[in-house]
Image (cartoon, rainbow, N blue to C red; front, side, top):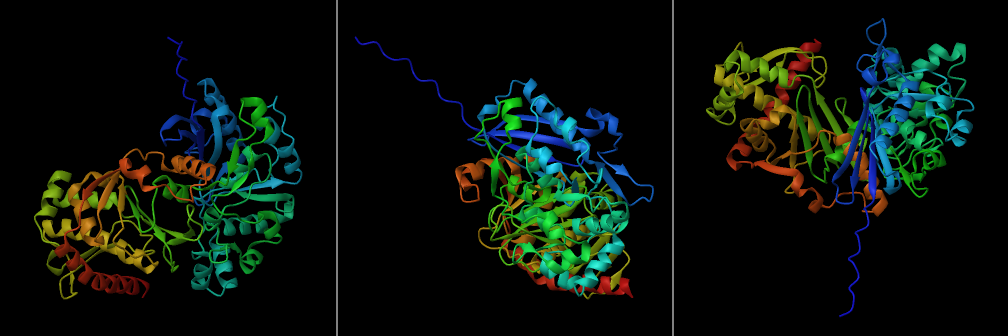
Length: 541
C-alpha cells in the first residue's frame, strides 16, 4: 500500500484591520475572511497617556465652549497600540489591508516640512519621536467645540444663506464643522504664523491614514461631507465656501476621494518595525458616523436607529433633500448614494422621566401600559422636550394636544406613556422623509441602544415605519468594524457592499408591522408635522 501524504495544513486566512481614533480611545479590530473578530486592542487616552492630562480625551477651554485634543497624543497612541498588539503575538504579516475612521469634524494641521519627515520615517524610532513637533497647531479642535458661531454666520452669509449652504454641502453651518474651525484658526492665528506655516490640513480620519501611509492621505467623500466645504453633488470642494473660510484651502486640503479608495501600500516603516507585508494596502479612512453605517452593514433602503442617551438615525438615501435640520453625507459604502444623520437630545432620559412619573419607575410597567392603549392614542399627540432639542432646534418644554389640536396640560398616565413613544417615533419618520427617505418593501429597521430591549417600544416602531424591526448583536465597536469591513471589501473588490448572506446572523427579527396600526400612523403624520411647525413658530415669536 502506498504511503499517503499527510493532509495539508490550511493556510492562515488574511486579516483586515479597522482603526478608530475616537474621542476617548484609539481602538483597533482585526477580522478574518469570514468576518470573525480575531483581535481587539485599545489605548485609553486618560489612563494610558496620563501625561496629557485629558478629561475624556479632551482639553476644555476656559470659555466653556472650546474643546481640543493634543495632536501629538494621537501619534503616541499609535505607538502604544501597535506595541500592545505586538505583545499579543499578533502576526502582522497576515494583514492584507487596513482602513479606519476618526471622530468626525476634528482637524490636524501639519507644518511645512512634515511631508518629508513622513516619507523618511526611521524604523528604529517611535512615531512620536519623529512627529511630535510636526504640527503648526499643537491642539486639534474637535467635534465638541462650539466656539465658532461667528464663523458660521460668516459662511452662511457668503453662501447666500443657510438653505443654500445646506443644499450644496448637506448641512447648514454648524460650530463643530471643520470649515468653520479652520476659519477660526486662520482669523485668530494668522498673525502669529500658525496657519501660514501649515503645509496640509487633515481630518482626524485622514490623519490616521497619513500615519500608516507615510504620506499625506486624501480626505474621503463621506467624512469630507461633514466640513461645510464639500459639494455633495459634484463631490468636489465648493470654491465659495473655501474662500469664505481661509485662503489656499483647496491646496491645503488636497483632492477628495471615494471612501472605498486604496491610497497605497503601507509605509516601509511598519514593514521593518512590526513585520507588516510590503503588499499591505492602506484604504481611505472616514468619519466615525459613516463608519458606523458601514459597520452595521446597512443596505439600500435600510434605516438604523440607536435608542440611547441620545437617539440617532442613520439613513441610506438615493435622492437626498438636505434641510436645515439633520445632515446629508455621501455614502461611505456606495459613493453614488447618500446617508443622512439625525440626532435627538431628548431620548432615553426623557422616556425615563415619563416612566418615573407614570409607570412606578418600572420599564415592565411602562411596557404594559403602552400595550394597554390603542395605536394613535385616540388622536392625542404629545411632544416632550425636557432638554433643549436639536431637532427641532432650540425647543424646550412639553406640548400636548387633543384630537382637535387643542392644547392640554396633561394626559392620563397610560396616554402619557403612549404619547411620548408615538410622538418621538412619528417625528423621526417625518424628519427622515423630509430628507428624502422612503420606506419600501425591502426596508429593515436595525435597532441598537438600551430601548432596543423593550419589545413594546419596538412594536410601535415597526407600526409607525411600516417595516420589520431587527435588533443587532455584536455591534459594540461598529465604527472599528466599519473600517475592517471596508478593508476587506476593497481587498476583494466586493463592489462596495456586504452580501446579505454575510449579515443574516447579525440580526434578530423582533417586530413585524401590523397593517391596521400602520394606517393609523400614516393618517396621523401630517397632523403631527403641522403641530410641530406650530410649536416652532410660536417659540420663535
